[in-house]
Length: 96
Image (cartoon, rainbow, N blue to C red; front, side):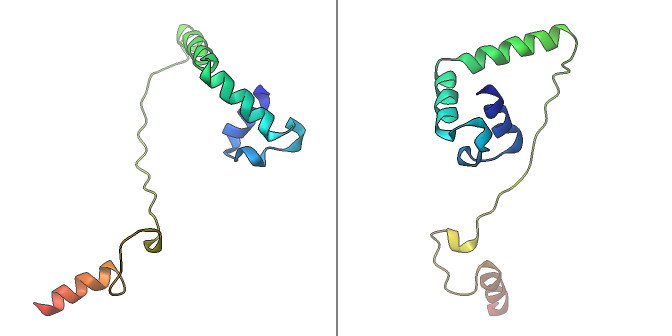
């Protein structure tokens, strides 16, 4: 089960896309959810972090990701009276 959970996070796949070799995805998901709820994953992270820090394997650098995910204009609730934001800006400039 742990290998299936690691595979899922490493590859970034949905739970339903886990390979069949790991068994039913529902079983893996349920096992992961229970371990998260009872704090098992927090304990594992704390132990691994403490070991790595003691061995000098951590430098405690912080990385900030400035990735922006934009929604398509049709995914919003905004009513478009013209072709969109660019045309609205051009119309305002021409009217002046």
